[in-house]
Amino acid sequence: MDLTGLGTILLALVISILFIYSTWDKLYRKRNLPPGPTPFPLIGNLLQIKKGEMVKSLMEMGAQYGPVFTFYFGQRPVVILSGYQAVKEALIDQGEDFSGRGKMVSVDKIFDGFGVVFSNGERWKQLRRFSLTTLRNFGMGKRSIEERIHEEAQCLVEGLRKYNKRPTDPKNILPQAVSNVICSVVFGNRFEYEDLKFLKLLNQFSEIFTLMSSTWGQLQELIPTIMEYVPGPHQKINPIIERLLEFVAERVKINEASIDPNSPRDYIDCFLAKMLQDNENPTSEFNKRNLLLTVLNLFFAGTETVSSTLRHGFLILMKYPEIQGKLHKEIDTVIGHNRSPNIEDRSKMPYMDAVIHEIQRFSDVIPMNVPHTVIKDTTFRGFSIPKGTDVYPLLCTVLRDSSQFSSPEQFNPGHFLDESGSFKKSDAFMPFSTGKRICLGEGLARMELFLFLTTILQNFTLTSKTRFTESDIAPRMTGFANVPMDYELSFIPRVA
Image (cartoon, rainbow, N blue to C red; front, side, top):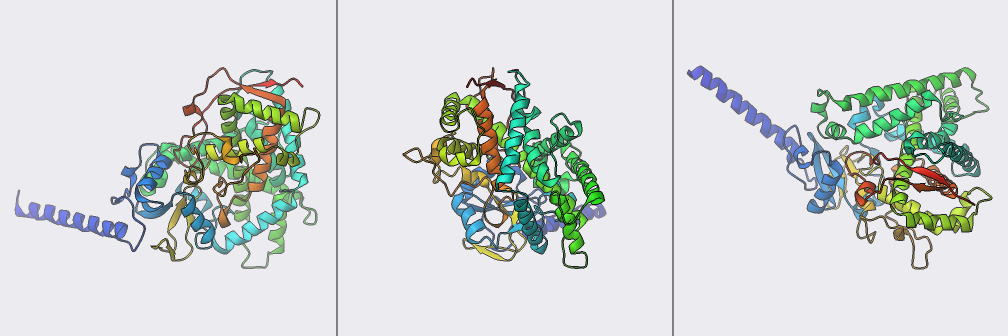
């Protein structure tokens, strides 16, 4: 090899070393961030994640590095909060500092900071305030929305009777019933369970949930710069969201053609009226893009999370028939068979209330939470977190905190019952997150879970030919969402 060739190799080596050192310095020596595993250039802490087990891996690192640690998603440092106390201190005690919405690579290309869930600053404040007020005006937390849920629950019972005890996958009918409640608020009408267009939309919701939680979806969040150029199932997420947006846009056009601003029929009408009202206001965030993306936020969140929780719940109640038997007994005692359940029954049914809370705690549908970000330079537990740093408050570590729950890895309704059998609250019950970014639809979801589950158990016994195991009912703890296993069950009518 001549000297010129050797010089070229040495120069390339020096440049490579300088690049690695520069990247390393930028990655790892950045101010007083919390401790954490040593990252590598470009891939960050990817090698610390067990294949397909992002959530489990982060939980294990919390045990190793403490309740506050730094983890690198590619070259981006992210602060992870583990356990009830750390999450409470951040989201409640320092709630304003941690009130920003963080990056979520799998959906950011489309949402790009628009819509009530993924926006920040003044945009988020305007959209959240408007959405809370509008949802309340359409009955959220009131008798009128209870009546809508009650009517849908009766439609669901009639639909389940048509299976005539035959085994069925609950995904075949449950998402339609749950989604129809939020559809009646957002779109002003419900859909028939056999509506093929509606079924296709709900299947797409489920597919997004599954893709974001898969190994491919996890890699997309962990090393986004690389995965953007890698073909795979994760590349289907944005096209699916685009198709869902097309449906929302069609519904908005229908409303635009027939709106009476003085007599709004649904959320879309209210938003359109607000757009007209604020037409001359340059600081208003009420525009078409925010309308489309906020409606999609509400539609998606109001469908998939409650539906997944109920599917987890059915699975658990078949694994523990003695718990299902106690629920049947409480329903028969408090409600009987001659009337439908109402929300006032909940205060008289501590066991049902405890079981529903435990289903939510144990199934842990959104284990990592939706990412937050600090809106200013923040000091937390002696560490410096620069403005704009993303934060993951792990809800799974709150719902499984052994200092708050006596047997966190087991399904145990006793977590929410006192010694006398009365319902007992827990500050660590945070399936809807907590603080300023708590889920908009918490009140609706809680009402739906009680009325749907109680109505179904008033009318049916849940059975399956499959003997489910502890492993079957345990949440997978993989990525964005805990999706229950596929299974079939039979709805056996109860004799009054």
